[in-house]
Image 1 (spheres, rainbow, N blue to C red):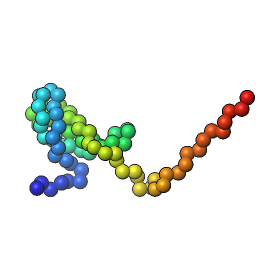
Image 2 (tube, rainbow, N blue to C red):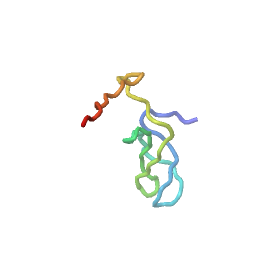
Image 3 (cartoon, rainbow, N blue to C red):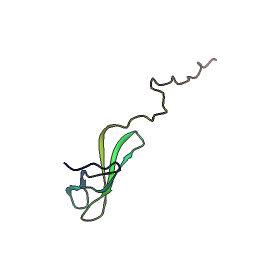
Image 4 (cartoon, rainbow, N blue to C red):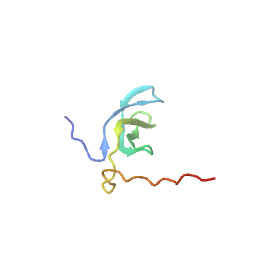
Length: 79
């Protein structure tokens, strides 16, 4: 089993330029705007950017409330 580094990941992805599945080189885990995790790196053959979306959502930040604070609502509009 390969040792996992905290920042770099070796994951298999699809290169659209080579049209084959290959190992992602220099992969870094990122969090997308919608909260999902992904790995971004390069194709070992052609150097094209490869991107693989991982399953599950990212964990919330440590300083976020656990139960979730209620969001303030607008009062009902009056005529």
